[in-house]
Length: 123
Image (cartoon, rainbow, N blue to C red; front, side):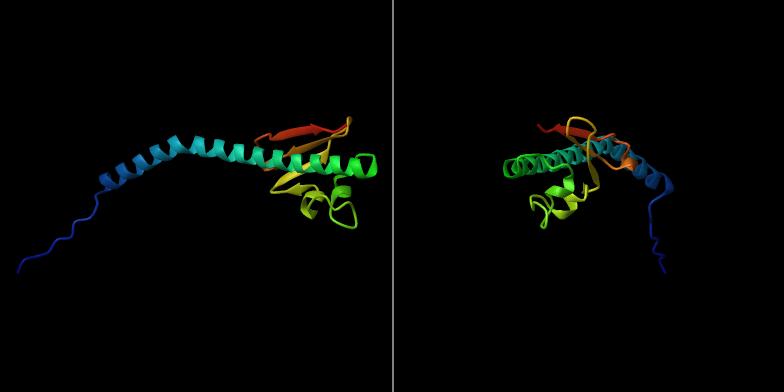
């Protein structure tokens, strides 16, 4: 009777495949991280543009800029931006008024370490 022998992958073959996979991941990872940072920056700028447009609408209606982001929020306030944006945060970003000059800042989460910061000035 003839024995059927099943041949599997050797330890060397498996290790080589893992090393090739690690090299490919190391080559692709910086580009993926850069794309994520750029996407976060684009999101932050879009939120700031939305608030800037709401501030301009608020100014044309009331003759002054809103002192707080919450004043631009849904009714009973002005109703110009969404409630989560009016609370000062959306998509993991923090929105706040900058001291002096009536500006508005947008910061990424503290854990990201990206140092994301953008600023618009009103007036």
